[in-house]
Amino acid sequence: MAAKGSLPSSDPGRAGGTERHWWTLIAVCGATFMLLVDITIVQVALPTLQRSLHASFSDLQWVISAYALSLSAVILTQGSLADRFGRKRIFIIGVAVFTLASLACGMAHSPAQLIAARAVQGIGGAGMFATSLALIGQDFQGSARSAAIAVWGATVGGAVAIGPLVGGALTSAFGWQWIFYVNIPIGVLTLLVSRRMVNKVDPGAKRLDWMGLLTFSGGLFLLVLGLTKGNDDGWSSHRIVATLGAAVVLLVVFVIVELRQERPMFDLSLFRKPAFTGVSIATFGIGAGMFAMLPYLTLYLQNDLGLSPLQGGERLLPLTTLSFVVPLASRPLTERVPAGMTLFVGLAISAVGIWLFTGLTVASNWKALLPGLLVGGIGVGLANPAIAKIALGVVPPQRAGMASGISNTFRIGGVATGVAALGAVFQHRLQSTLHGAVGGHEAPVLARAIAAGGTRAAAKISGGRQTVVMAAHHAFVTGMNEVVMVGAVTVAVGAVFAMLVRRKDFYSRRRDGYRPPVQRDLVPEAVG
Image (cartoon, rainbow, N blue to C red):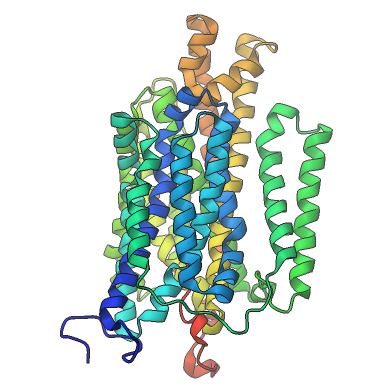
């Protein structure tokens, strides 16, 4: 019998007992904290990275997109590997790869080195993301599982909330390298703790969906590449048309491959239910519209307003803190409201929050963002738990692992696509605005410099000419206004699709009479 006050074991006869289960929870929470902090912590350091490594605007986009792209492309494959070789093994490998890649990120001396290391980080992160909650699920049952998932959820919220502040503090005090070096002690401790976990495999997992992996990851990569390079190469250029065309072809082939697979990594049959389609598109919308916009808010705060990394991180705290506090404070209410309605309201509020960022002028300061940050934080705080609840609730429990993996793929894939698409909008608006102010010959070069380095870069290029500096300020805020409008529309579209979710779409044990799920699918692999 478990000791008083301890979490009960899911298998009382298993070696290690309750103590080992606590170590599992500690390891999973440590990995989750490291994984999610790294998403928000990097955004605050982007301007400093640009100056230190002489990075272009495209390089800055890839610092974010390379991580999100590799994470979203292989998370489902990592789940399949965990089924075949064991969750503990894939989790440990993921933590080790992520930690070593963090060291490589901090030691990078060029944008190309940093981007490559970030891509490897994403592969390691996918191994952690795909197994974290499943490891909790195999060690905890009943009320103990609910308590363990609550601890994990608090870790998720806390990591997102403090990421900008920690990133700003480390960058200001020690340099941008330390936003990556901070992962190393956490990773080492997590590896030491994770040795106590038990490894489990799925006997039915015999082969990997290699064609699915290659076509999906290749299609996503070419899509992001085309969106990132479109302004520089020209949207009608043969290279961009061919790149985007190849992306479409690969994604179509991916759909065909998955429809023919006996054990697909991306089960398209789940989309036969409108509710699952609705929550998936809504998840993509908030990733592409809200979370992909945060790097551009950081660039505005630091590159246009001239704030330090720490000051910029502090200004984002209203949004990140509310996204952590609101789910906890609103839980008694949202438990009584249909999850589809909560998701619709959360996305609608998020869209309003983004729209409140519009109207920036050259005379604006950071306080112009405050209403949008507050409203947006409330919206995200309502939408995030609803996404997890719906994605898992509208499919049979035995499909929960697959459904969760697809949900996270849509979220992270939305971030990668959104960063590239919003960057294309931003750079195009910069160039078209500058065209009338400084002339057609100088505008493209100046636009690229302003996108990466802000108005300080414009002053440096122009030799401090005041007319050019003022034109750069005007172009920057004009570009920001267009970016936030596109972001607001993207999230609003997601809200429309959230209306496909209805109360009757959720599975009920008594109504649907399904069989109890097998062990591997008791808990989702990850909840974004």
